[in-house]
Structure formats: structure tokens, C-alpha cells
Image 1: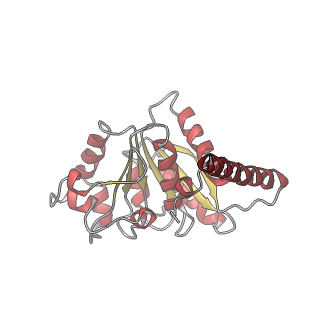
Image 2: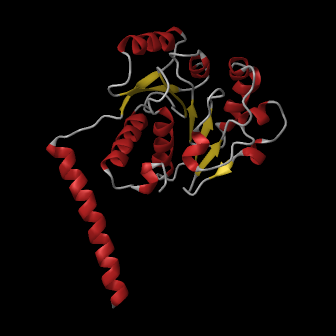
Length: 237
């Protein structure tokens, strides 16, 4: 099964939640163009890469041309979400070993492309803060409606703060029952200190046992069963 739930289970409550986040981002576009979005967290394993992948799919389903760029040059993982190669990618483009066209991957989702990290460099912060990186991101604006950058955790390294200086907005991912409140505060302060435009916080891995979500989960499951039943009846005819 595909690891991206917005692809494998598009009618699920979780996929619907991502569409809700998508709507919020669209409304943030009213006063300022939000095209390049940086996504980070306070520490590892809070699910930022999962959020990146699902949001990107959600926007691509609106017929928007979308690019996911793996900006985590220390621990890249977006390639695993889509089952693609990480042999070459962003770092190869920045050092002129390959062109963007040679490195970018098409996905099974229409309008969605992925540029993986490529070879992990010895100087991630310097590479991300370079003029070449800024100019590269600027050039991508001409070809995509939305660009999502999967950044390292801001609570661990400064890379996400660097990236936020040339992006239009930042989403901060917090893992439910996993994030340290003090670390989350420090992370927000670091983003504030570089003038990051924080679009909002995504509470990830939150389990709801309320009747509302149970009802919707039941509804979506029944809807899928009904659709399958209708298709089977048509085949028999």
C-alpha cells in the first residue's frame, strides 16, 4: 500500500484533514502570494515528511502543478514516501553535476513532481544558504504553482531558519504526545528571529476517539463499499 494516505485512502478522515489544511493555506494567499512553503518541526519523527507528501498530493489534485523539494540535506526521507531513487537530486543540481530536468521525478499523481536530496553534502547549512540555492528556488517559481520544501527540524539545526528566509511561509509540525513544549517554544522563537512567516501549526499523530470521527470513518468505509458493489453489479450485467 502507498505510504501517502491521500493517495491510498483519499476518502479517509485523515485525507480530508489534509484538504482542510490546504484550504487554510489557500486563504492565506489573499493578501500575499504563498507559493513556496517550508515545513519543519522541533525534532525528528514528528511526521513533517508525511505532512509534506500529503499536502502536496492534496494540492496536485486541484490541478495545481506542485513540486516537493527535499531540503533535509542531513537525513533525507521524501524519496521513501514515494518509492523513488535518491541517487541524484538537489545537491547535484547545486554543484552543477546534473540539471534539474535530469534529477526531478514524476510521480503517479498527476501534476506532482519530486526533487530528492541526492548525495548528502558535508556542509548542508552553507549549501542551503548559498546564492545558488536562493536563485534556484526563485527560478522554480516560474514553473510551479506550489513548492513544498521538507526542511530539517528547527529545534535541532538552523537549516529550516535559513530556508524560511527565501520562502513565502512556514508550517510548523507538532507530534501529539511527542513534542517537548519547551523545545517547541524555542523552535518558534528561532523562526521568529529570522522573520519567518509562520502560516500555522499542524498537530500530527493526534488520535480522536470521539463519535464524530467514528461516524465519518464509518461513512467513508460504507461509501467505498457501496461504490465497489455498484461496479460489481454493472460488471455482472
